[in-house]
Length: 138
Image (tube, rainbow, N blue to C red):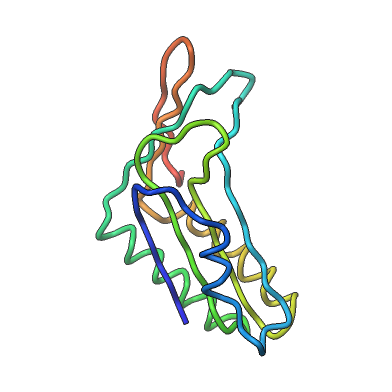
């Protein structure tokens, strides 16, 4: 099972994790990305995320399918938020359920790393003295 979401509403760790629970899954990995209060020595006040939704969803789906093909996983959920996020809020969740922990860990790491490299989601870091746009990928 694959579940992909891109939305403005807050993300739920429990709801995402529940999507990948399975009686045959011995390993469940949940990656939670949070908005931190600093970057490169500067105080962050908030982040703003924008995306080209049709392409972002397509790329997130592609990542999930590749993870399922590469590792023996049962379920994967990739959820990302757009809009204004305050310190401590969750912009991204990735949950993976697999029969064994190694596959779950590896698939989860692949999913977040690839998402940051390929998905058209951009963030604007807001500081006390200005702001800067940062691509989610180089």
